[in-house]
Length: 194
Image 1 (cartoon, rainbow, N blue to C red):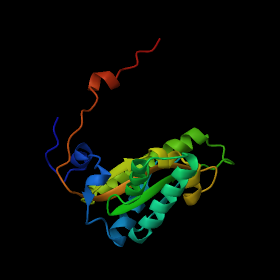
Image 2: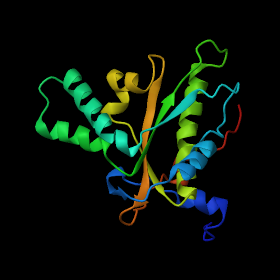
Image 3: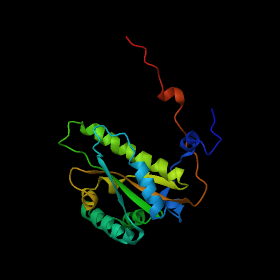
Image 4: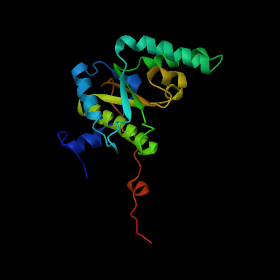
């Protein structure tokens, strides 16, 4: 089955690709577009209506501060880093025109298992990517060292929270490549009971 009608919701889902953040260029979403994208992202399966996730927009005028944070945290957690490592951390902060940090914010006091709350946070990040694509932009969801650094996490949230990812958003600067997808038969089966 193919989805050629680009106005079709299934076509949008079938054509979404991750953009490499380093290849995303201006324009990115303006303030109204970003609000609409994030409102869609928040329409996520959420057992218990807890909203166990948050979105933090890192505006363009804060990218140097983010680069400084990443460099400081990296130097603190990795004694004697190489010049290229530091340059990579600084470049990480400056990719793409727009950046949203997605945080898992589980409600420990809830009877809803934390695992389900974390799944909801992942779904929120995926909804964000779908909304970005439907809005005519491309997004790239990165983790890597910054997502696992306690120092970086603390700059965005608290100890119970975790960085789900850094979602970089912009316009593709070059054609996006299709990556190999899993073979249907290797990921789908039918349960046959006992």
